[in-house]
Length: 418
Ligand SMILES: *Cc1c(COP(=O)(O)O)cnc(C)c1O
Image 1 (tube, helix red, strand yellow):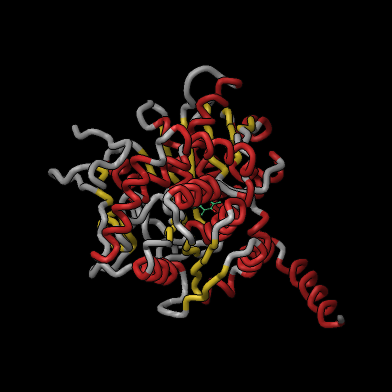
Image 2 (cartoon, rainbow, N blue to C red):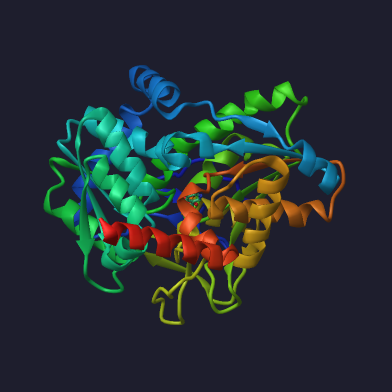
């Protein structure tokens, strides 16, 4: 039996042996090696230092508003015959867990003496968190975003500019996230001396998956203490949604060596053709893309496939390498939720618990609704990775189309009148 890797060894999670794989690595053009080496040194020497950790914790408390609460979902518990608890990351500044990582990496950039931060963003959530972190710590911020995403995600683009960031429209390829990643990498290789690349999920080339997990592990660190006010010992089951894997890794971190049943929920999208299911699906293959080895949605030649999900944050072809490893070791199990199931869970927890979850997080909540049907009296903790304000344009279209159209027509008429 192979060991479970809590952090990467020489950049890899797991070893190539028999039927198991070493995931992760550093599959980038040589021109980026010096930048990654420098980052690795910062990860090993600056990040764990007492001074850095103290400053980071101070920012977590005074800027992000941590600790985020653990909420006992009393009404849902009664209806579902299990004890349900919600770790509500949606109360973090900028509305989701992404700021935990963004503020950490931006602080690291400052300590490394960098003059400028760049980031890529798909839906704009990571761009928003990075822009806010840069505003707080006073460093220049450039966000690369696909031209199509800029059109689709106007509120986040507006807010990033309000926070003082420069949003650069990427016109190449499909004009979405993967093109923005390529452009950010290109820009980084042009100027890695003064520029720090803030990566938004627990993936990409080593050491990013380790760095992002470390910053996000504040979630499970807090949870360890918070469960004690409700019960002794560990939860029975823990559930998180999985895009790239940063909220899941941060949530699972302190529990990987425990006996807790850990469940990741992927985006089941519309059907078996339109989704973002990278584990247990017929188009999921082990491959190498965007700097790391992991499971990807790809064709038989290894080309990444187009993904689809109602939640922009889960709509990505790759999954973080550590989660691929934990899946292969049988430590984390994976399920998926469709768009419709996520919308149902969103409404259930809004109505019964007074919580409007992000569409991404609603996938995790849907997982809870499913799991609860098969168990009784279990302590189930779910990571509600974000709040749903940002999704209003999408959920309104899905749930209250007519009322929403009337509202928008009114607004437009008024703006034109003035
Ligand atoms: C971006 C995002 C996710 C997905 O990213 P992970 O790296 O898998 O956590 C999940 N929830 C919310 C609210 C997000 O903004």
